[in-house]
Image 1: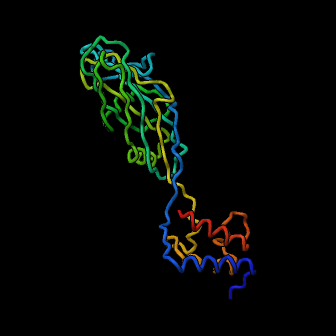
Image 2 (image 1 turned 30 degrees about the vertical axis):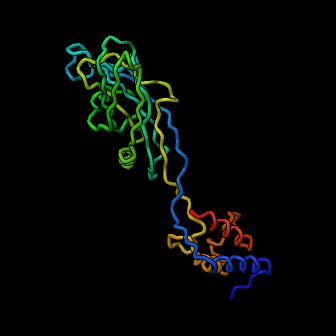
Image 3 (image 1 turned 60 degrees about the horizontal axis):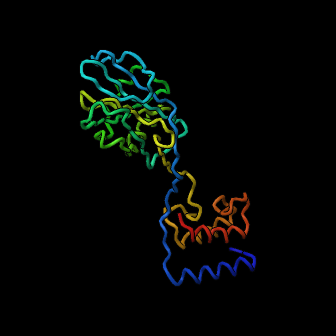
Amino acid sequence: MFNAPAQLLEVIMRFTKCVSCAALVVLAGQAWTQPVDVDYGVRASIVDDDFNGTPDAVNPNSGLIRSRTNNDEDRAIVEFDISQFAGTTITSARFVGQVFVNNSFDTGVRSFNFNIYAGNGTADLADFGENTNTIGTGAYQPPLDTSFDFDFDVTSELQSIIDGGASWVGFNVDCIELRNFPNILSGDQDVTSLLVEVEDSQPCLPDVNGDGAVTPTDFTAWINAFNNNLPECDQNGDGACTPTDFTAWINNFNAGC
């Protein structure tokens, strides 16, 4: 039998009266963390000096994107350290940034492919060819336009890369037109970044019976946990099972999950 102090019984009676007036059901679910703004760890430009499709060097002009028919081609790359997300479930991921004009030699429309790949934290010549998994395109037209912003959803792609064991994710930006120059992928860390949200693995405390919903039946489950000194009894995180946990459970119940 449940033997509780008078103060606890009074609280229970008030709660019981409350739930008898209306059906209270809150679906229990995972909580989500605030977005993590990840700064890039690598930013470079890989150049094909003779326009034959084979990269030749890392261009000292980081972030350069250009294509000059029968002359050369540069593709910008950025890579982000994603090791902190190993083993997590990604609920949202966005690659955001800006491309701006370096000058207006070419005044036609300039358009670009944005591609994602599993990186390694260094600027390699092989990154030039990482342009097969396209996540989107962007365009602008100098001199009327001096820049354009981009924002691509890469949630599923990032999850696949993390699940594959990679600690870095890279993005390759290449020109669509054969004559398209010169452009720069912004190096401002406040502009070009990876925004990631992950599922929080914290349990839903008021769902004491673990049925995936926060309902008055969890009240009975909490009483059982209290009587048997079960871990689910501790609702205030103080490491003990005491009558104060019932008040904490009511607060958790009202807050939901």
